[in-house]
Image (cartoon, rainbow, N blue to C red):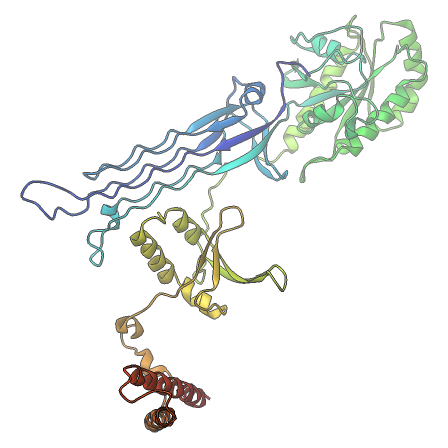
Amino acid sequence: MSASFVDRVVLHVAGGDGGNGCASVHREKFKPLGGPDGGNGGRGGDVVLEVDPQVTTLLEHHRRPHRHAGSGGFGMGSHRSGAEGADLVIGVPDGTVVRSAKGELLADMVGAGTRFTVAAGGRGGLGNAALASPRRKAPGFALLGEPGEVRDVVLELKTLADVALVGFPSAGKSSLVAALSAARPKIADYPFTTLVPNLGVVEAGDVRFTVADVPGLIPGASEGRGLGLEFLRHVERCVALVHVLDGATLETDRDPVGDLEAIEAELAAYRVDDGTVPLQDRPRLIVINKADVPDAREMAEIVRADLESRGAPVFVVSAVSRAGLRELGFAMAELVSAARAAAPEAVPTRVVITPPAVDDSGFTVTREEYGDELTGGVRFRVRGGKPRRWVRQTDFTNDEAVGYLADRLARLGVEDELFRAGATPGAEVVIGDEDDAVVFDWEPTMVAGAEVLGQRGSDLRLEDRSRPTRAAKREQERERRAAKAAARGELEAERLAGRWTADDPGADDALDARAGARAGAQADDLDGAAGR
């Protein structure tokens, strides 16, 4: 491959990190209670790919595969917000396909000015001034900025041409491009002279179209032999194919019919993207080149009928004497015109915004079992955009910030879902996926009476059917008194046996402990009966 042409690169991109918010208190003479005045952090910059007509190769990205957008500035006091990070705009050639590291299609960039955000920048953290509320008038913390998105993408360049010339090495494809257009590709008398696709603009009547000279194919090209696999992708965007056959080959084991069958087999074996017409099903022409050589003219007469029986027009041309090029140019223009007429009308891309469902809580809680019987256990994983973002924004060295995170998760309903999933205090809870998860032991948030009351007009205490009745409460009190009397009897028996004296200061504590244990056990039995 030429050192100045690269059509496939792996790009490592990272969006800018968001700036941290500022925790500050306004200080001014004669104003001891100035209040919070910390500013917000700036947003991180995005990494954007944009089609640039001046860029024709991915060589620059091959030399500089790591790209990072600017990070946002930190917030400051006096309500000063941090500066936003600068976006990084990367120019790519027209016809670039963007794929993920797993091969998923992310964007097909066709047309000058087409843009695609490949890595988004992180949000800036809120300062304590933005976090102030009637309940939290002077927050002593601020939110951290989110890290920018980091990902690896594969850029593939697919040449935008109307007609592709395919054939064995040294079949004369570059000579035809030079004879039909003003392009001047490298031409020599040895195989694999062409190492990069060459484009030429051809005019036939009032039709103007582009012709691409695809580097020579050989049997096995679709599996990686020779240069075929690297350049077959440039044929995908062409609407018509032209088989260029060497009529004056010096190899005794080759002939135009065999060359055509070999190239057709490689085109059929090449897998194109979904929704794209297979290469073997596209309109095609057959050209027998080098008609200026007497042996080529004789070979053309021998194989012409056999080639025409395959359903494609056959042209005998010479790139040197220019014989037959006019007829070939008009035939290619006819195929291009028919393809353009059959193509659907271009419709501007509409931006579709899909709001979340009404019953979408924004997170999920799943119960997971891990490990074996000895080292394993049960944990609960919380997934969702908001919980994951809130965890990334929390400064875990600040207790107040951790409490604020707990309040936000409780308001979102995470604790209720954990209860429903069977979580108990001290259970292992994981927020996020494996790569950026935060693990902690869950302790439910304590609520006061106001929270128990529920919504206005309702009282959860009245709706609780498992509350003990008045008779059950009386029975429970009698059980407690009986348990205390029994405990006193045991202590008295121990005193008479000489184990301790009545003046022992620990006797009352032991009495209370034994009575409490008995009463607790009986109360649990009573509550269970009331619940049933």
